[in-house]
Length: 294
Ligand SMILES: C[S@@+](CC[C@H](N)C(=O)[O-])C[C@H]1O[C@@H](n2cnc3c(N)ncnc32)[C@H](O)[C@@H]1O
Image 1: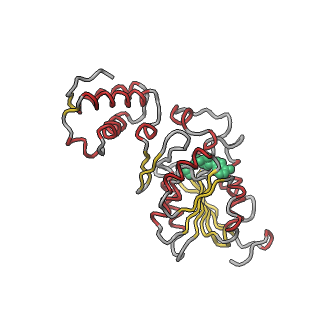
Image 2: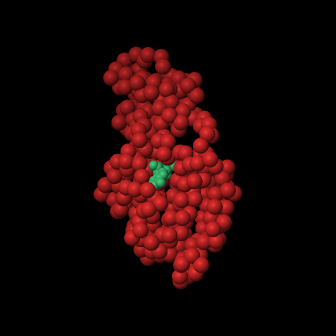
Image 3: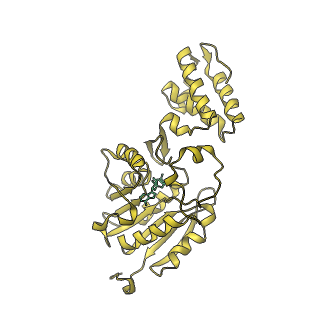
């Protein structure tokens, strides 16, 4: 970035930063340049028009932040926060940055808990806590539980969930919540789903998201299979599961559920970019696998 003069006008700084970020291949250079400016100036992006000249210290901090982003450090690691639905979550190294496409997954989980007086909702692989906290925030009557295996991610979830109505546990989802077996209304998960050996284009993902949040066996569906098992154990008959998957898994991920005979109404859904993004299914009442009722 061209070294700005002390007292430089903010629009000039942002336009130089936008050019530098574009040259580095950052996908949304103007947005990121504005977000970083807002971060450095301690304001919000919508308020930047009220800022005129930027002093020497703030210019230097901005230069540093733009340099980090040009090196393809995630924007959210630099600002320390990620916006997700109605929440702002603390994020940084060691935790998966919540993605906009997961917002529709939460929408489906909230819809599935509709009409239940005090729905019990479980989030498997909670990362920053984005899904669990959103459900707790938007469904005040819900009793929300979340599990995370990775201690580094768990620390971020603990920080974000402090003071909120989410019961957070550390452990492997495959063994989680034995105390809730057959009593859960909605299971929701954004599990790892990238096939081992696939190449990841964006350095922000390849170099900064935790590997345990990404990779999931030869076809990318190992964790989805675990989610299917765990959801079948946790849900009451008639309960719902909502599972995010990769855009290329719009047939293969639902097939994991259809194959076991434990589910009805297995369906796949698209995100706001019209890409296959998540499946939903209803726990069948199946005497063959020990469930009762309907
Ligand atoms: C793709 S990230 C999603 C995080 C968060 N739910 C979100 O949507 O932003 C998957 C998360 O699952 C966690 N995870 C992976 N395998 C797990 C397992 N066996 N048990 C519990 N958590 C697991 C990872 O550590 C990671 O935080």
